[in-house]
Image (cartoon, rainbow, N blue to C red; front, side):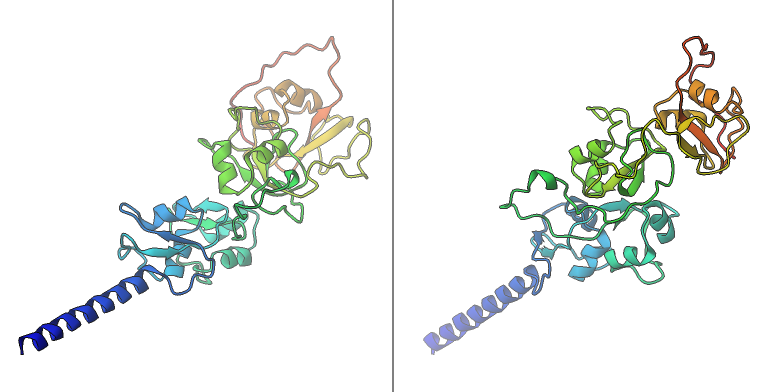
Length: 328
């Protein structure tokens, strides 16, 4: 009688342990992970922390693992399926999907495709999160050494777009996406955000110094070049040929100009001068209608930013200034 009871208790205990182990295994191992990329949660982890560390949007991480929106049910030891990595863009307070689309030169459809957790009206966009602004793509195999010509982490752009604002002098024109530098930005953070190799980022923006100490807030830097970014179009005219102004000019502007810039609202002489590595004296010499305090820049007008050099006898009376009235 006692042996039968003991056997019953032992058998029951074994069944319970087996069942518990099965449930634990099923909780810790996602049944299907389409990306084949997993991560085991550790103490102190949050969905936001995990997402940032693996270059994925927090919303995508939550959606693919079907955890609560606040991630309160994340447990130590839980195995999470990781979405494919992408270039991330931070969502600021008051920002809309349309803002993100315009600032990153995307289409609304691309934004929703790359961030499938967003609803069609983009009403679940949350400040503090990050969204994909490049196609999610698998990481390169660690056993494969990339060829020297493919050092970038992402594919080349397939089309060229116009920069939405002033760019540093020398930045490649064969570019599919630009980023406006903000105060506090660093080269490595920009390179990581847009999944571009650090050296390639500097190569396509040669105005950046070796230590990356001269990023200029307000200027647009290329972050996605085309494959032929360092090639010059065969149809380019000789450097001695003057260029035609792409928009109406102001009174007195020189016609002997090799390069033009169309002023946009908010532009200043200092910003334009830094962008094209020229001085305010240069701007005023080639565009004599510009006042000494640079208070009369006109949006939509073309200003010469690379004209004939000054005569050796021409005095340079106006030093470059850090402040100026922005274009209206």
